[in-house]
Length: 230
Image 1 (cartoon, rainbow, N blue to C red):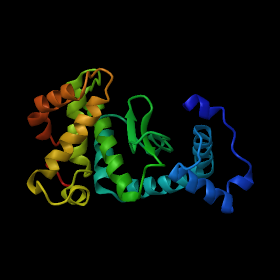
Image 2 (spheres, one colour):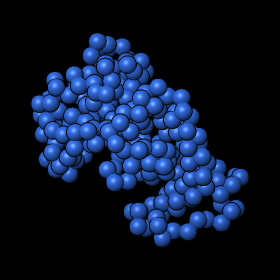
Image 3 (tube, helix red, strand yellow):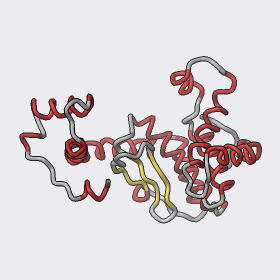
């Protein structure tokens, strides 16, 4: 799919503005009378026209968070203490297309923030904090994602320490049921989803088993924080 999109050219200006762009947007959302090729062309045009705006907004959010977020600044400082001189150049904002994730970490490429998935600077703060925990774990603990226990542990820690599973977020998504367990359930759910997507994991059942096997030790490991603050 990505190869086919790479070969596409952007539609002429008259198709990218005014009534015609509105018509195409509505057709894409409803799917009425839309061929597969037209859908791919719209996706290409949307990224081509919106990418600069998305990236500019995400980069503004990133720079604000790097300056003012206590959690992000704390994680950056502790990564530097491990010997890696991290800066904004290691945190890239780009559209991720069909990827439903809001970010990712790669040991040789750094951190990617998906500008087409970031809702606001608070969402970016949680996402960046999550990926910084992965980076910290990779440097300090020599994480190997081929080892599913390593993968499960860093996902548990990242969701726990980033703030993305804070109780108020979960109440907005799932209501008041299981109030006392929402934090832990969110962390486990996210960890299982991530481990399930690991090519070395056979299925969701194996992911759940691995997450449960490391849960106690990893959930209680808040390094480099003294405790969970967010």
